[in-house]
Image (tube, rainbow, N blue to C red; front, side, top):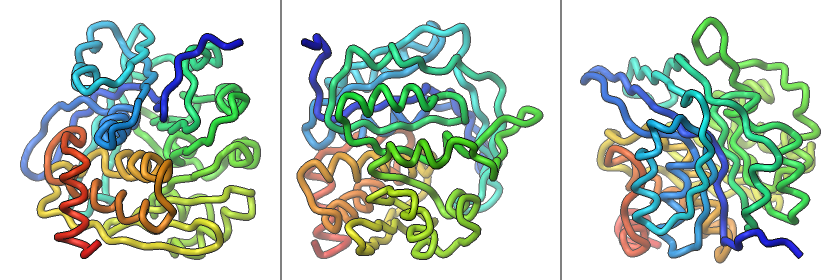
Length: 297
């Protein structure tokens, strides 16, 4: 009998200390897919767990999650992952990422104490989450959502670069239930920026659902059908963490919604998140209002 704690959804990924640079200046914010993701999921009233690795001096970074009743399992490492995100234009897909330090990777034993029917895997760099860790999660009978970024991005000369060669791609995708990629990652993996074509190419690996984002919205491919919803933010001041929030809100919504409803829920919540710095701090009612007012849903 397992003594693992039970949750509705769990998030796994390293904390990142992000220096965001835009034409308006620079600022340091707490980041990481686990952070943005858990924040989005907790707004739905779900029981949320978050597992991360970071340096002890950065433990205060997840205070927001604790205040919103998220169980945080923080594993101490010698250093945190520190990134610089340079946005040279107004296009959120156009960015240059640099790396100054990287935390140690997760181990299969890290996930033993948490049990959830849905897991969101949000790595920043290849090697952070191994195939063995994914197998340990899948062995729990979990539904896995996974972001491509942590498997196609590598560190080269201090910068994050994309590697078109992903040796474990077939093995990883066989374990994945929902695969998320942005338009850049989709092109790297399939050779096309057409998200509809990319989804069908990737579906040959056996993945049942896809969440594919671009600057203007999200495309979902599920059960052989496509669903699409635009982002409708009133500003882009909080665009960092957009993809992390989009996948997390979709996975959380799919616990109780069909793919079409989850697509619009994800687009609405992500739009609200992009209007403010940091993680989504709104409520379920805020998202429902946005669905009515901006989408007519």
